[in-house]
Image 1 (cartoon, rainbow, N blue to C red):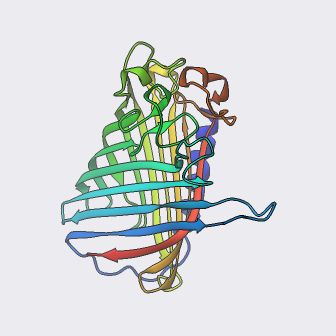
Image 2: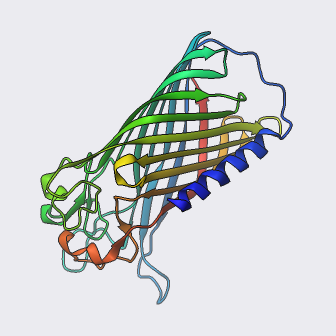
Length: 321
């Protein structure tokens, strides 16, 4: 876990340096509900009829990112809720292959995350007793070859297989209006694989324990978040780090570092850049390309314990409603 400790220290130093940067005076605190979100789209398409040699092939791709939030702030408590969906798929080549079979869409990205945190004031607007809860899964199934349609025996993952849930009572500390730290000495985590066949895959690559559909974990959780705007609110910065360490597994656990930068083009319309890093000591990731046609029980040699990186850019429309 030394690398995770280093990552946490880097995060703290970056956020503290941001917090010391002069910024415009904070607006007056508003109480009650605030709801809003953003929508980013990624659409691409190319059609080639009788292409010249070396010209390429047909391509159609679609996807995007949806962020929603609903926050309630009162004098003695707050309740923040958020949801994020990142989804993208593409098909390269014609809809129908030469042998008459359908050329399916390949998956580029599929992550669904939900979060909620309730806090009750212990000392003013700085220190809160809090309860933090998160859930994560994917929306569409994935089959061998990283496609979203296929034969049942080639299924690699699907909705709630796997899924991650956590609930953590702790302390929420807000040293500034832009910087938040959360700590819990008793965080309960669950990795759940609802499909029995997927739970039985060789090596349990989805994170469940051998012979079970789940993995229960008890440990401590540390979370930090920095959110701010600069240059007359034309540039928005967000960086969030979540770290869980399992007491029963020599403090091995998982870490998720999410970063986003939005540059406003017009009112409500922005260029959005995002980058995430995720590592889980009990979940395997692809370290080599899995050859097409590889059976799910034969993919273990292509998997390993390494961080997973996700990044991209897209046009986003932000709104408050």
